[in-house]
Length: 100
Picture 1 (spheres, helix red, strand yellow):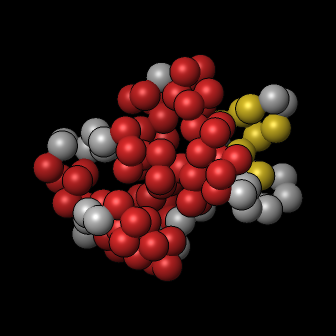
Picture 2 (tube, one colour):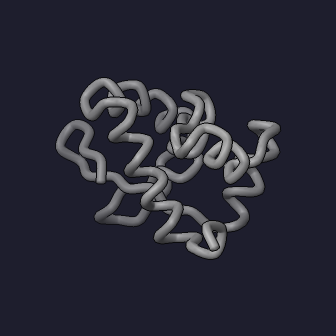
């Protein structure tokens, strides 16, 4: 999904991560998706990325601080909307029930 320094990463979501992110962000992810026509605020997008980033090959979680540092690089290389859309697609894949 994302490549940084020749390592491929992806994001993986579950209900517990979503609850944590919403608590930290003090907002509803689905509410923000609906309110902003699928374009998430930069800060919320960074939280989604940093809490859910894993190394694809090993499935090991990337420490949140390191993932947050990587976020800016990923956005600069891929573009904000591309990053946004990739995260939304993964949310739908992992937690499809949220979108029904």
